[in-house]
Image (tube, rainbow, N blue to C red; front, side, top):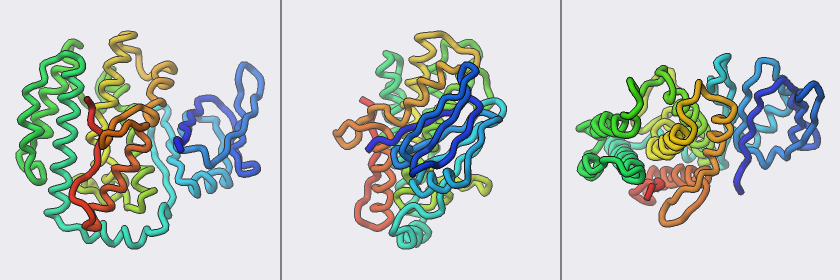
Length: 300
């Protein structure tokens, strides 16, 4: 079942009533009330300083493994919250994840980067841009990406993708469309992290990412091959409407569709949210020794 992504950008009150999220928001000077079954919700984004949410509702959301994202005063995602218990086999899967050998993690990271570069190449090819330079890079990623093909590919990729925008440099705090990319990645990160928790894995323990201040290192690993979907989406937004002045209401409405983007994984089309679940489960099987390959979507 496809879970819903809910965005709240107005003052209001969110509480639990009869196992449903009761929503009271102020619109055009009046209070509007609606309800949504908690079990239908996958991601909740809170983006207003005067939003109130009850403890009972937070508890119900976490019981249903809902990703709860709060935004800062710049309206950019600031925090991501998940339950401590996400799967009935959690203890067993934690042990396998902690016991994973460095060679295995390096092999899985090489698969991840190879698919990321392959998808970047597909994005450039779909936009009729120069892309062949990336072919040998994704074909020859070594264990642990020892030759850092990810960085080499990124330098080429961003220059070809947004090189027509004067002064564009891909960076976290750079000017638009960097803000759009950052916002899209935040939605993607919440989607991937939710799948990781649901699969019974620890989102903090990454294959490659190891930042001591990052609670979602594994999400940052597994989302890499999915990033080009966001890049293509942002490119098309800019091509259609020009470079927006920040993450506007209209842009947010488009980026909130990320969890339901149609992607192709293992010759099957499905919403991105379901694909991330399959990726997380494939990692569980790799850690258990049941299979050797991670499942990632492929842009055609």
